[in-house]
Image (spheres, rainbow, N blue to C red):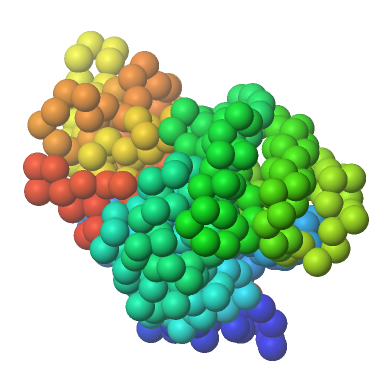
Length: 407
Ligand code: PLP
């Protein structure tokens, strides 16, 4: 581990009080290392569903971000996965945070993060939450309506604003946030004027191309539109803007690398003459998605001819709500090493609640499994545990999180 970013992560609030299980990654492929760890945890007597959080993955992703987007400070979007160890790790690595509510701001401040490292990136906020932001010195928030300007002026007059604009061409995204947020091009001037009229400073422009953007070029058009809004503010005689917030939408892997190339070029082209502008991003999925793996236990079984039906102890009302809410495509794999003689069966996997909607996969090929066996779901960190419920008394929050790092 050494005197490295990992060392800092292991000492971070939210991490240092956890039992961290170490595993060697050198000899194994990443997935195999996590699988080996899950086997250890199960052999150690784990009785119900749990997530493995791979701290080394977050360190790698942070390094990857800094290498690809050296001029963009990542402000992790807490909503994606508010796990304390993940927040603590990112804080230790020097990330800022995007918070959507009072509770998210509280969680981040509790880690010792400075309020100046938080952007309150929710364009429509309850008054009590804005007043809380004022109390604790979180002084940067987004808006996309005149009403929000008036509210911010009333509840937190010294707060600065980022005007959230709609990304012009969001393309193929998992979740199109433009359906709900972002000023249309013809609304930009009136919204800048509204802030000017109220005497609230507009510090910059933000956008979000949509979560899980698969087309990298969407960032180019959005950065161009942001520059047009900077210029519009200058024409109105507003003080020069100093922040560009390029939002989230990033997916770890090839699409991130492609997006970074597009973003760097667009920043050079549209903001190259404004070197003092601070550029931030609000990645959620990028840091969380691939760092968490779910292991769920088979708690029931029914055989109907060739068909196999299994019940597991996590489902659509638990962390697998991401199937409904985030278009997650489950591809569960049995934890047990495949035995050659087993022929796969078309299988249905149900979650534990009594609702028939609580169905994880149907017609899915799995080897014969028994009650007490385990299924592993990869890439389970984004918009999963964050939105789980206690429906039927199955508590998402009861899921334990083990931590792992390579040594
Ligand atoms: N910022 C804002 C304002 C968001 O609403 C979201 C997601 O909903 C994010 C950032 C994070 O997006 P992603 O997880 O796609 O990076």
